[in-house]
Length: 218
Image (cartoon, rainbow, N blue to C red; front, side, top):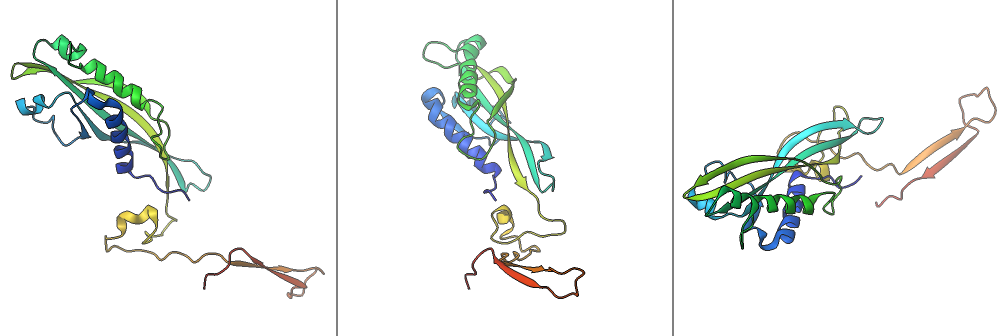
């Protein structure tokens, strides 16, 4: 079974690629922490800036006949912000020596389009680009866009009625939960096969094999 994909793993991989690729185009590339919830002059002075946040899971669909593996589709949002001391047009399009929001949008989509970031996810697929802000604060024009991306990964279900297993990668989040857990089933080491060569049988095998699947470590 492959190592499970964590949401924070995808977010960190997106951040790392953007930090390396954008270089000096952005003063900061960070996980979103509410910076745009209350726009102040100090926040605007930190532009050009980029933030990444999880946009939610949009679909889960079984991919195997046993329905134990789901293909999960999730959305990520990259917000880009630029400012200019002159006009809104300059904040969007940039000016001599200052990057604009349009340029950041193109750069982010170029860096992330069809990338799997070196982890077990589908290629990132660019989606909508939405305007979040187009206003003026403290005599500075500012523009913020949200760039959407989607990707998919596999998640394994527990057996019906089962509980998390401590030490299992998929259940690591439960390690310190003190909630109910199962113990992992022992490995299947051998299979016994009986042969009835003279039907109708008398209930006793005429021959038997013991097939070793895995050597015990005991």
